[in-house]
Image (cartoon, rainbow, N blue to C red):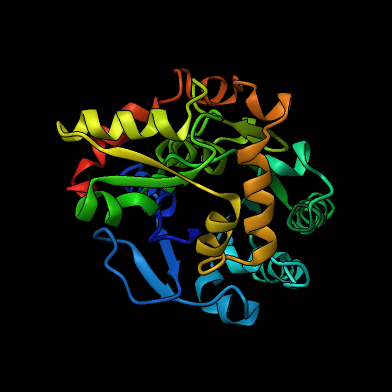
Length: 279
């Protein structure tokens, strides 16, 4: 059995489906009750309380570990999650980390995530680590303003990074959970192109077939909005990357293609698949 945490999100949902379609027994874990594919077991648990994972991990051979934004804060006690997996007899953990562990190693949230990576490496478990950059699905933050006002409000409109489609992350995660060749792998996951928020707005407008206006937020305005749904440290770190990406954060990684044998999806592909969210 394979346990997928964050199973109702933009990565966990397609990962759960892919594993079920591959004939795997899957337990989907989320904080709240949710619909899951036929044949998939659902368990409600909060990763902030690792002991609550015990029912989900019973009999599991592998775990996909995705942390919600609040668990990226320093002092979240993340090592207990690896301990819970070990105690349950899990053999393999695939951890969703972050590109910033390598590109911004001294940010507060990056230090915490690197510490979790190190605990996993030293645990004796089989492991793989995924380090994605920005997610295409972060554009869903704009859905309400696009639907109601035809506007995207975001900072750094003309500064781009190679954001990655969560569906690609899910496919790479499935490969790492199922294929022994990826044990011990650290994969940096990006999209195939650098794209700016203004360029994302244009791609969404094309998918909608109607104009969408771009409004440039100040850093302070953006931080205030982001801090409503994530720790202030994570919002600060994210804005630093978005506003002043360094050469490593602008690099197009070959790792999606290396694992999947195809190029990563473009943002325009993501926008076309998810256009109903913006109508």
